[in-house]
Structure formats: structure tokens, C-alpha cells
Image 1 (cartoon, helix red, strand yellow):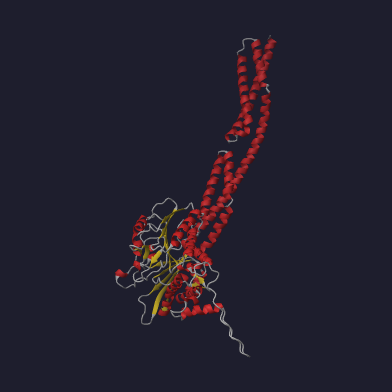
Image 2 (image 1 turned 30 degrees about the vertical axis):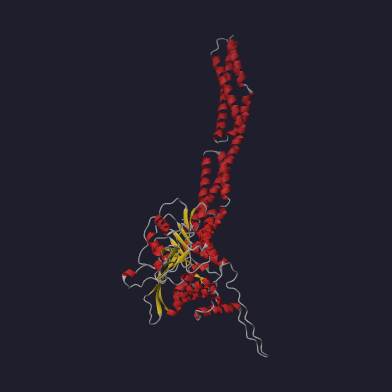
Length: 627
């Protein structure tokens, strides 16, 4: 009996040690399984979980058998409990547990490699974010239009941050989806980088702004028939250096001044007579009949016949320097006319030092003058390079008052457009087409999520309604398609023609007095940018008022900028010009640069009708509608 007891004690000691080993195996297996389950990859160890649960049951049963063995009353009872314990600890499930531990180690190794791959992918995307962030910031510093790229950057940052959170939480199922979304979003990263860099390169020179002052010294010298001007060029400030002032004077004969000023009226007459075409064209003017050749005389060479281009240039020169009012305007090449007048103005007004600076320094220009009747934007330099095509150009009237300081009203975050269709006589069907086209282009294009567009129909376009709109100040862009009226005797009585009966003209001075907020105003109407000159300094104070006219009054009312036309404009080219301009400003492009791009595009598409040259921008050319 003592031998039997000793044997039972030995077996019990062995089984207790074996039980401890099984418990250690269970703990290690449980740790591995729970680690996988905690990462969201429990499905990978689903079979192992079932085995773990089975082993847990056997481990608990073995503990119960061991406890029963300790309470056995006799040898037989102890033998039965020990046999049960032997059976539980020798179950093949424990051998499977050993094998599973090795499998899980392999799975863990593969998981670690997968995590490393996730981290590597995330590091790559973080580098993309850093590169795009730097490029966008560099572009914004030079005021380039990178709104689209900025939005793409924000989306990319959000995706990367979400993927990082998934990785930190070991949520591997979700991180796979996050990385897939990153791949979809990131396919255009290189395109965004390339465009942002190109925008920065193109825009950088124009972030610098020079100021040109053309101050006519009143009153004109009527005895000697001449106009005297004080000229001032204020160069942009550079890093570590202030801008400098270059001052000079110019004197213009009355005949030259009046001839240049009269070009606007002559172009207006030509357009109204139909001598300037409105549709797309391939050449500057319609071909004229070739001159009849002169028969040669025996022994004498035939005189040379001037080419068609030479005849057109001759007619243009004659028109500028010696044509009569009754000359047939159809004989004039109007593109040539603008270029020659622009070259003449540039040479007459700009001294050599200023010309040299302008030619060598591509920058934005603001022209401030009290002689607002001359087409300063159309000055040409270096063989026909128009200022307004070569760089952003805007003008400012020179008044005696500051525009009011006003708080920009809060808005929803989108750019709010108001498109006004004014057709008091029912003669402008294209006005309705224009506002509908603009709305469709804006709400269906890339910027559709940035804009809210409302249309004011011709029935709604009343004086009272416009009063309320200006006082409310809720719009970022106000676009007017209709008639503008210019009063040559009192420019304050110029305005927008809204209704026929009773006749309602929304006068220029109302804009200055009612306008709230800082909208960008686009007047797609004939003669909307025509102005009167400033009153002469030295006259009584009540005449010291800003240059009148619609555009000037809108600027002095506090608008961000105003675009108007110097002469009648064709409907379709004008509408497309506005769409191109808006597409640019909604990208964040400076309004002066947006004008320059729209001009060049319009000139390329419609070289004959001069719509590109008709529009004038008032305001700061380096300001942006969308930051």
C-alpha cells in the first residue's frame, strides 16, 4: 500500500508540472490570438480561437480533476481522478496547440511585414503631401491661382491622417480601404504639382506692382493748344530695398490728344455701322480687291503694285494722321489702328527711362490718372506688345475721397454670384442667353462646389430691387448684362438702363452711396467704362469730385474691382470673355492676371472684333476674389 501511495504521489507531481506547462501553452496561445483579434484581423485566427476555447475547457477540467484528487478519500478515488487528469493532459488538442503557436508566429511575421509595407506607403504619401504643401505655399506667396490644388492638398492630408489613425489603432482592415482611397486621390498629385509650379512661374513677376501716374496739369493751354502732363513711375519694393520714384513731364499737342481720344468714338461708330465683325475670324480685315495692274510701256519697267498689307497700313496711317471724318471706315484695319495708336501714345507719353524700366521689368501696373478718356491700357511697346496683353493692367481714378471702410458681410463660404439680365426694350435676347450660359458654365464646371449663382430676370431688374441688393451686400460678384447709358454732360447721370416705362436709369452716384461689401462688379454693357475727367485742381471745392462714370463710382463705393467696356461689344465674344475671366478668378488667380488671360484668349478666338481691347479693369490688379 505504501508503494502504491508513493507511485500516486509521483504521478501527481508529474501531472501538476505537466498541467503548468499546458497552462503556459494556453496563455501563450491566448496572447497571440487576442493580439490578432485586437488588430481587427480576428478572421485570420478564427480556427485558432476555436482551439483556444477548447483548450480552455480542458484546462479548467484538468484543474477540477486535480482539485478532486486532493480531496480523494481513498486510493481508488485518487486513481480515478488521476486517470481523468492523464486523459485531459494527453489530449491531442494540446499537440495541435503547439503546432498552432508556430503557425501564428508565421502569421505574425507576415503581419509585421504588412505593417511595414503600410508604413512605407504612408511615408510615401506623407512625402507627397510635403511636396504639394511646399509647392502650394510657394505659389500662394506669389499670389498664383491654386485654389484647386489647395483643395486637393486638403483632401490628401485628410486621407493620410485617417490612414495614420487606422495604422496606430492596428485597424488593418480599414487602413487597406484608406490606402486604396489615397491611391484614387493621389493619382493626380503630379498633375497638381506641375500646374501649381507652372502657375507660380507665370504669376511670380505679376505679384509685384508698379504704379504709373499721368497727371494732366489743368487747365489745358488753349493759347498754345497743348496739354502738359506730370509723369511718375513708382517701382515695386524689392526684398531689402524700397521702390523708387521716376518723375518726368510730357507735353501733347491738342491735335494729338484729341485724335487719340477720338479713336474710341470712331471705333464705336465703326462697330455700330457693322464695319467690325463680331464672329470668329481668321484675319484682321476682310480681303479687299487687288488693285488693277498698270500695263507696262515698251522699254519701261512696270511700276510695282503695293501689296494688300501695305495698302491697309497706308489707309490706317492716313486714318490716324490725316483722315477726314467722312472717310470710309471699312478701309481701316482696326487691329492695326489700335496698335499704331498704342505705339503713338507710348512714345508721346513715356520718357525713355520709364520705357526702359517697363520693358525690362514684367510686373503688374496700376495706372492712376485724371485723364480717363484715353485708352491707356492699349499703349504698345517693343513692336506691338500691348501693355494689357503682356501684363496685368488696371486703372484707378484720382479722386478726393477714400472708398469707405466696410466689413465684408458673412457668407456661406461659397462665392455668391448675381447675374442681372436687363432688357428694357426687349431688344437684347442675348443678355438672357449670356447670364444662362455663365450660370451653366459656373455650376457645371470645376468650380461648381465653390459657387452659388442667382439670376435676376429682366422683369425683376428694377431700381428698387437693385437698391436692396446693394444695401444688403450679400454678393461677391455682380454681373450685369444689358444697356449702359453714358451722359457726356454729367457723368454722374450715367448709369444702367433697367426699365423703359417708366424710364429707369440706375445712376452712377447711387452705386457709390449704396454699395455695401466688396463685390467684384462686371458690367457687360456698352460704354460702361466711359468716364469724365477729374475737375481741375484749383477750382472751387464743390467741383472736386472723383472722376464720374459707372466704373469709377463703383470703385469709390468700395468694390473690389469693376470691369466695364469702352465701346460697344459683341454679345457672344463678351459672354465668353466673362466666362473665361470668372474661371480664372475662381482658381484664385489675381483679377488683373485673370483679365490678361481672358484678353489673350478672346483675341486669339476673335481677332477682328476687338472685344479683348474694349474691357477696362478698375481696382487693384493684384487682388484676388478667392484666397
